Each structure stands twice: as structure tokens, then as C-alpha cells.
Length: 288
Image 1: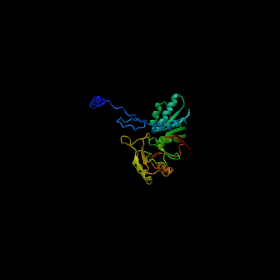
Image 2 (image 1 turned 45 degrees about the vertical axis):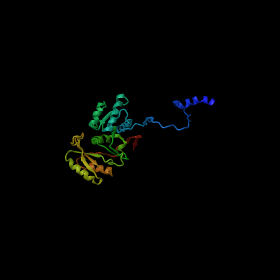
Image 3 (image 1 turned 30 degrees about the horizontal axis):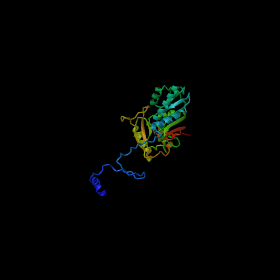
Image 4 (image 1 turned 120 degrees about the horizontal axis):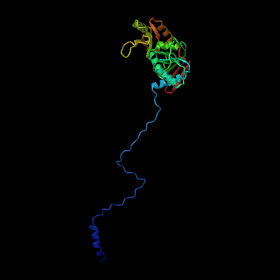
């Protein structure tokens, strides 16, 4: 009878729909591998290293110019050079005169450009006629060799530069490291020769023939309009481009000066007393 009483209960369990209650989750081990997901990739931010600022060529020229001005003392007669580097020197002198850190300075400019800049900065000026003795000249250079011999004059002022700097007790050159060469003419850039206008082509041909063994190309300098460049002294310039460095600068300078119609050349030999070179590692002073 007991088995008959359980029959309705068994039938009820067999005919009931399955339960929709989700099963309890199995406990997950902390060491079990995590399933892969489609989560977005992480974002990365890059931080650029802060390096020292790269110095431009003008920055280097200014460093050298500031160092050169340390040679200047109040009361000096100064030769003021010509060119982009010398312009930084003149600007610094004007600044020091304005603040009163320098007094009683007299400048002898080597070009009309330098004269105009110096006058704009209220630097007192003179000429060699009135001040034939100069205490210190500061100027740039286009090339500097290991013996401190120079090529100058790519700015067109070589005659006046040489006159003023030859009259100076000290001649300090300011340049950046790109101007260093193993031998003059080694940059393969212009070595200028100032010539009179009369029969300039005659002298151009003679100059090229004179240095044919060095593979020289001689060219008349022209201005931005394609016309012959005229110096402050109303002359022309023949630029010599050397394929190989000049073997003997002294002999070359003597030969060039011996040509009739040549006014001056850009070889400044045994003239610099110190050269200030600005490079990426700092400022270096080379003295004789």
C-alpha cells in the first residue's frame, strides 16, 4: 500500500518541466588561465628625450664673437672687421658701450657695411690716416689652417681688412669650426683676388694659368643681378677655386702680388695672433 501512495508523486516529478534556474558556478582557481577577450588594445604614450639644443652656425659665431670681445679694454683703438661673424662683434661692442662697461673706444671699420652698423650703435669711428696705430683688430675668416694662416675676403673687403689688420698690435680671429682646413684653399671655395677694372679678363687668365697645376678655376665675381661685383674701392674681384690645397701660401701670395693690376689677395699669412673657434663642444682659443 505504501508503494501505491508514492505513485502520484513519482508521476508529478516525471511530468514537470525542467528547472530554468542556472546551475551554481564551479569555483575558479586563481591559477586557472584567463579566457581571451576582445577588449581594446592599451594606449601607449611616447616621451621624447630632452636633448641639448642644437647650435646653429650663427649661434657658434656669436659664441666666438663674445669671447673675442673679452680682449677689448676701455680706451683702445679697434679694427672692426667685416662679415657675418664680425657683425656679432660690432653688435656686442655697441651693447657694452651703451651699458658703460666699455668707454673711450675708437673703431676703424674695414668696410662701408661695418661703418654703417657701427654708426647705428653710436660707436665712435676713425680712419687709418688719423689713427695709424691700432691696439686690436677683431675679424672673421673664411679658412683657418693649423698654423693660423687665413683665407679672407669672401665678403669683398679684403683690401681694407688687410690694411687695418696689418696696422694692429694684435689680430684676433673669430670663426666657427666649419672654417678649419688642413691647407689653405682646402675648402674648394673662393680665394679672392682684388683687381683693377682695367683689363680684368687679362689678369683672370694670368691667375688661372699661374695655378694650373693646382687645378684652379678663376671666375669674375658677380652680384645678385649678374653684374660684376664692385668693391668699396671700385675694383673687381677674381675668385680662385682650388681643386687641391695651396702647396706654399707665401710663394703663391708673392706671385699673385707680382701681377700688374692686382690690388690685393685674400691670403692673410702670419697675421693672426689668436684664433677663437666655436664648435659644438665649446669655444677653443688657439694662439701663436
